[in-house]
Image 1 (cartoon, rainbow, N blue to C red):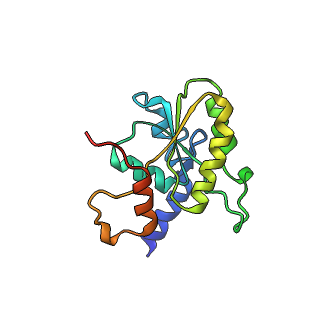
Image 2: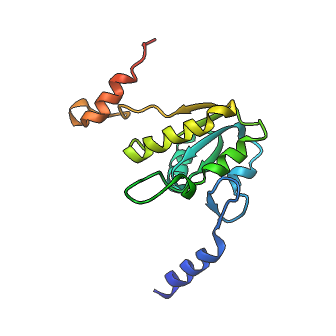
Length: 160
């Protein structure tokens, strides 16, 4: 147990929160924010660091991130001031960012937060998009819930 305790103690002292995006890592700013190969005109907004790393594992996104630190929730008492929304607005002030992608969970709280953030970004001149919702790759219709099927039908697009 002692090596585990020592490793966890070292992690507490070595892990830092990125002052730009809110990611956790060994430096501030984090590796992603420092990477000159990243598309600085794109910011993907996520709820937490776990969501950021899920997107990173996909290798499908090469822009920057912004971690909100949660979602709005009246039941849990989480208000806009409790999230990193003002920090996002500050990041947009230099005009370099052209698009903000909202990659928030398809929950009531996630969608409420997405709606609120969209309203806050309305006057920035930045394009605001969100991830598509619907059928997962490899998913079988008879195993999917009603909400997923409804979202997939509403987000349908022309083939070819």
